[in-house]
Image (cartoon, rainbow, N blue to C red; front, side, top):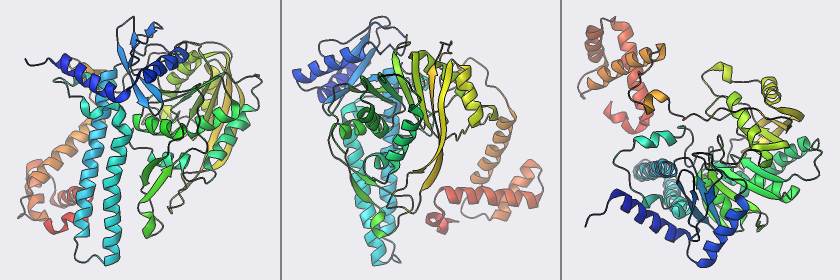
Amino acid sequence: METTPRERESEHRDMAQANVLGSDDQQRGVSQEFRALCPLLVCPKCRSTELSNPVSGIEIICRECATHFPVFRCGNVHIPWMFPEPGNTRLEWKARYNGFLHSNSVDLARLRQSRGDRQCSSRGRRRISKLLQANEQYRKQVTDILAPLGLDQIDWPADATGMLQSKLPKNQGLLSYTNNIFRDWVWDNGENEALLDAIDSVLQSDTRSNIGSIITLGSGAGRLSYDMHRRYEPDMSVVLDHNPCLLQLSGQIIQGQEVSLYEFPIAPLNEASFAVLQNCRAPAPLVDRNFYYLLADALDPPVARESCDTIVTPWLIDIIAENLRTYIPRINQSLVEGGVWVNTGSLAFFHRDESWCYSEEEVLELVEANGFEILASERRTIPYLQSPHSAHGRIEEVLSFSAVKVHSVDAEDKKPYIPAWVLNTSRPVPSSTETEICSSNYLLKAQVLASVDGKRTINQIARMVARQYGLGLPETIHAVKHILIELWEETNGSQINNNF
């Protein structure tokens, strides 16, 4: 008898969970961890506090909206997957994982082709062979890190429209922040100490006798959370990030495991630096039972109102895909009155709307306008991502501040990243000057590329396009050249040089 999609999904979930939990002891461990986290969590879909953890320990269930949130093993601890649409978010990360596999396959094919170049020297072939071997092993390393999530065991739905509700910004890739892993757990070049000192400096104005519970939003590779937990000895630390690769890897390292991962420096110093096998390890294992991990959205954390004593946002507020003005109230709502928000990082806002790209002064004004009082703020110069194997590195002027919550404010619900007129296909698509310009560019590009047949010259293609659009020949020749050069550069010019 053919199984239904729901039955197949259940089977795949069971297979993944068999990977996740292998013993009664592990299942009991999940229940213990959940009991400690329970007072902090709410359902990310309906904001209910009515959450339960079955005896099996393999998921958290919202009793209000009946959403099931899976729990995945990470070394000797477990990570709840707390997204509003957990299934769709897993599919989103599966798509990014597949994208990594495809990109890796392309890189391997490119390296094999380069190694076969007859003009390549023996030293060059040795370098390329090393890169080829490293990329093959890197594929397995990443696959092993993500294995507990069972991403390769879930099927694509017949209708993937619902995935758009969980879509992430394009720049938030599976491996967007791998250099942070090496900075946190390998290089030992003083960067971690410098950032912790910056945090320590602004926390000197915090008069509380105990820092209480700490939640780090956008914890990344986890070193700052690890260092703060060891220095301040909080009642509880929670590291929260939406990237499963970073959280799985950092969780294993913090527990004392050594994880091997290849580093591919941006600007290798020498032949040995093109691919460096790194052993990522923590200075000392952190085996405290009050250090927890949470896969969730840092822009809308699934934590109860006024449940956190301290919130930390490292390198976060300038890269979020929404207006900081609407985000700060959510931080306010998560803190108890008298709780402290600690921020550190740059203010390199990237929004197209310039009104969202705040200055340091505007950021501090926004903080105080949303129920906080600034305790301390400080600019400090620190090194940033300075790999000992790369000629490329940065110096950052980071802004750190601590702010105490003095009163509560109302917060807007987080909106999906994708606009409403995409999610609701019955709504009109708004027109804009940018749309018109893009339309003209795409039409022209399509016409030019359709005219390439391996025989026509640029002059001949330009005459055809000029006649169709009523353009002058000189500017059309220039436009055609620009389009073909752009294509040549996008496809790695030297490899297609013989075809043009």
